[in-house]
Amino acid sequence: MFTGIIETLGRISRLERDQTNLHLWVNTPLAKELKIDQSVAHNGVCLTVVSCSDSEYQVTAIDETLQKTSMNHWQVGDAVNLERAMVVGSRLDGHMVQGHVDQTATCTSIRDQGGSWLFSFTYDTSAGHVTVAKGSITVDGTSLTVVDSEPGRFSVAIIPYTYEHTRFQHYQVGETVNLEFDVIGKYVQRYFNAING
Image 1 (spheres, helix red, strand yellow):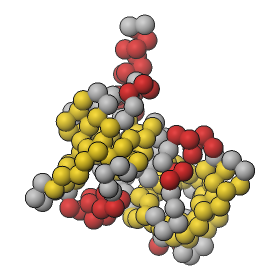
Image 2 (image 1 turned 135 degrees about the vertical axis):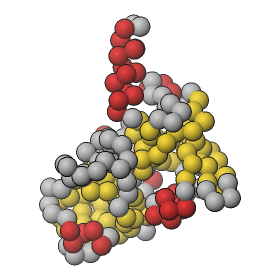
Image 3 (image 1 turned 90 degrees about the vertical axis):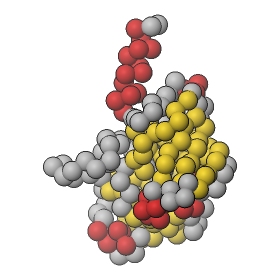
Image 4 (image 1 turned 120 degrees about the vertical axis):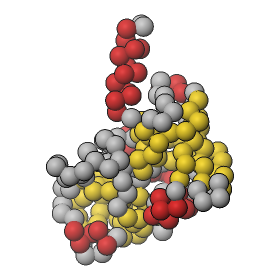
């Protein structure tokens, strides 16, 4: 379980295909604090640490993960949002994030608001996911508040701190990002779908 509060940016230092799996090595100062079997969210994708050193660690993604996330687009040198699993008993500063990406979205516009930025995204509605104005959404692992919610599209307002400390500083129009919709909203949606038949 995660909070969507990004701890730091890491850099992909190596990628290796192994049949349908993808092994990734991430360079980050967090590496020296990690242990094998720990969970780390990478742009919102929960992966298990399988080896680590003082400067980098390794994780493995299986084919299902590669098909449902933006990971097939990742390249050596790319920045990734990193968050370690939450600690029970600490403050929940973002919202409850599982690290299970629901689908990807595309960045359609980036507007400078004179002190903040408004990023807009579109996504495929066929899976039944919805956003709610002022509700929570996770974009590449970052916990955010939805604005301008419409079927298949939404926007988020980004303050300078979030812009500087996450992948938002690297986004361009056309970028593919990972989405995790609010877990409570997903259960409510499934309930209404079940009773309406």
